[in-house]
Amino acid sequence: MNPFYRNIPILAFSQAMMMSANSLMITASALVGYALAEDKSLATLPLAAGFVAVMLTSIPAAILMHRIGRKHGFILATLFGIGGAGLATWSILDGYFWGFVAASSVMGMYNGFANYYRFAAADSVNEPLKGRAISFIMAGGVIAAFVGPNLANVSRDWISSAEFAGSYAAIIVLHLLTTGVLSFLKLPRGADDQVDAGPPPRPLAQIARQPKYIIALICGTLGYGVMSLVMTATPLAMDHHAHHFDDTSFVISWHVLGMFAPSFFTGFLIERFGLHAILRVGALFGFACVAINLGGNSVWHFWSALFLLGLSWNFLFIGATTLLTQTYEPSEKARTQASNDFAVFTTVTLASLSAGALQHNFGWEMVNVGVLPLLTIIWLAVVVLGKIQAPAKT
Image (cartoon, rainbow, N blue to C red; front, top):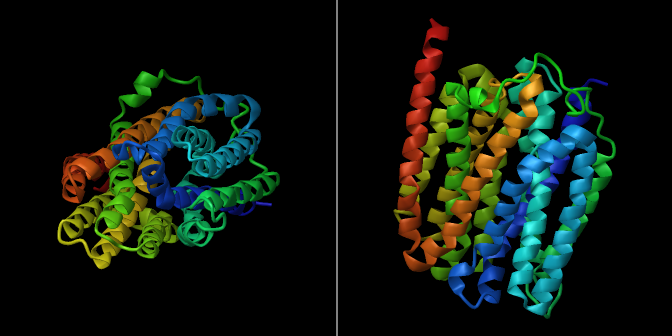
């Protein structure tokens, strides 16, 4: 069977389960942290700890999967997800804030491996299909838009003695499903990272000096950072403005939908209009999100702004990932992909960690004003990409 048709659905499902768990945590984590922490400015620390773990795991995960294969690495990682969710459930029941922080870190280790789903898909197909393969993997997150926040809402009182303990217990089931599905994965030789193909690898510093690498890094890291900062602060901001949790889960659902629903056609849009156009529109969506958030605090404002924020992330992240695949040879993919994801999740960690402090100490408006310089840098990088690609169009 064609690897595209066999592996893409498996990886897309695994991505959907990962993002369902993540969107559940995005919906509930800050509220759980706020309830458990004595210092309320640390409410987003558990979510930030998860991103720290992703950051620290990204390079070791790439090295390990280079040796044992991506399939075995992905299956091994689900054990971290299961263990972390179990620890989170216990910590909520026990009222132990630092245990909840540790649990988020363990679940973040799983994500450090699972973030390579998109690269596994891209490396298993020919060049013209890479953007489409990445896009379809990210489309698996459409399921997460409905499963994650709604599962958080439905399951938060499953264990009556501790709100949201049942939600984290439900994450265990999601990871068990992923383990079973990944057992059917059959990646082509080379895409599984057990062999090196092509010419000897260049030094990473030489790869990182390429203009396309730099632009991909800027769009991927800052685009994800903007999304993480605003998204992480949203549940706290909505709670501050006395919106019901049902409204918060509704907003997060539509935000996650905005993140992943376009993935069904983002790859085709890249093929049709080019990376430059898609990245430019992604930056514009980010500016529009900030403008709406600064315009009011109604549920409609949160809903429309977070939906646009999701669209912005989708175009910037898929566009940046596709651009990154143009900067390395097969023998260089492990180090290049690892360095990219390390930088991405370093930025995401700083953004999510600062979100709680910014929201608590300065308010929702400052959270949004704070991302404007990052969006401006993205815009300038996209302008440079347009100038680089212009000669190829003449």
